[in-house]
Length: 225
Image (cartoon, helix red, strand yellow):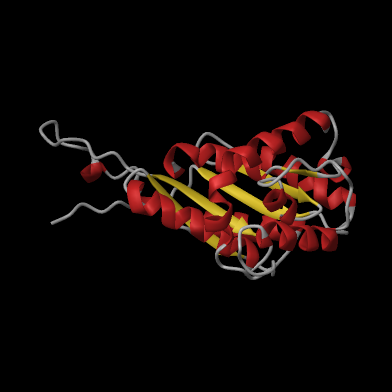
C-alpha cells in the first residue's frame, strides 16, 4: 500500500504510537504551502498553472493548496488565518496574494505587519502585495516597468505583449497565463527585484509600482524548471 503524502495531523503529533520504529525507514514528508488570493479567477488560475507544473515532477516534495477567497487586505488575512487554524495540514508557508488597488494605505501596510506577527517556527506568513495589481507581475515578464500606471493601462499593454505571442487579448479570467509567461519567468523575477531595490525602505502602499509575487515564484523556482 502506498504511503500517504499528507503530513501528520496536528492533533496526532504527540501520540506515542506515531513514534517511528528504529527499523522503519523515514518517509520525507512534502513541504506544504497555502496560496490564498484576493481574486477568485485570475490569480487562482495563474497559480494553478504553477501547481500543475510542480505536481508533474515533484508531487512528493512540495504540495500547494490554492484558495481564491474573494476578499481583500485585512479581511483576506483574517479568513486565511482561520483556515490555517482549522486545517489538519501543517503549512510551512502561507502566501497572502492581494492587490493594493484603491484600498486604504493603513490596511495595505497592516497586512505586511500582521504577517510578521503571525509567523512562528511552524508557519511563515508572507504578504505578496502588488501595487496596483497582479497584472504588473505579468507585464514584468516582458519588460521592466517603473511608470506609475493605472491598472487598466496594464491590460492594454498585456494585450499588446500577448499579440506578439500570437494569442488573444488579455482578460482577467484567462486560465493559461502561467503557461504563456513561463518562458520569461526568470526575467520577471529580475525585473521585480529591480523594483524592490528602487522601493527599498518604502511601505507597500508607497511602492508604486511594485510587486512581491516574485518571492513565491523564486522560492518554487527549483521545482518549476
